[in-house]
Length: 305
Ligand SMILES: [Zn+2]
Image (cartoon, rainbow, N blue to C red; front, side):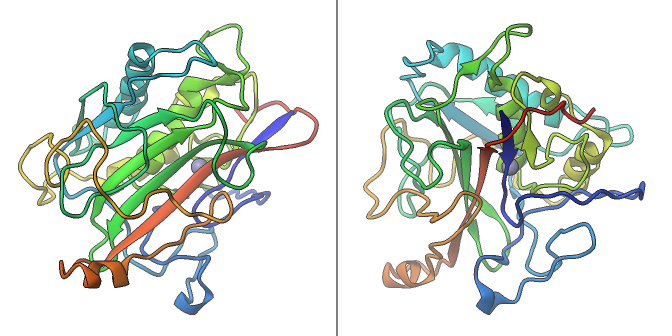
């Protein structure tokens, strides 16, 4: 079985590039699923229109839902350790003598198990399993989905939530008995969480395909490193370190009118909230980007090295 990662801008990537130039892509405010926005892709299939998304904060927190996954027998503590490892892969790289200018800390567990952003109250950046059913399209092929809420004018990320399809995937944590390697999936999703999109480099963690039985996505490639270093360079004017989410931290879900990505298809993104923000009189212009990790049917192939 072959599984594919589809993402913000593209799917079914089959192009190969001989160039040694960086190929990494950042998610931007331009929604390629909305023809009216006229998004343009370059030769590496990166969006060249829109503002690249990024966290304006120097410090972030993430939270694992307290339920873990009963179906796959992985509790929140193990998940929390693996998410920590996944983020460490990104934040401890060498960007020419310094690390990326972003730091993450766990605030786990949380009671909330909803993908949501509360515009008027506290929040959490939640990693959660879906044990009973996958609530989006492509349920039998999707591994995980990251949803990012951002400011459409500035590209600032306000919130990110990651849902993992434990209902229909045999998630494993072993280094040797590997089915759908949870740490590989988490490391890829952590890249989306931090604002990266898919790359055409086959050896990269942010490449759009994952092959079951492999663990290679756990290790970043030079292309991934170039991407995270470009997104969070040293000396950027980040907000002072404060690990609280926007509007403060809450373990319970907020009282939001809508939740869920609303993506019609994995990799699509939708539900711009401009009208709702105006309705609430907050002056916010908020959009939502989703990036899903999903598999395709087909013969298993060796993973790209
Ligand atoms: Zn992806």
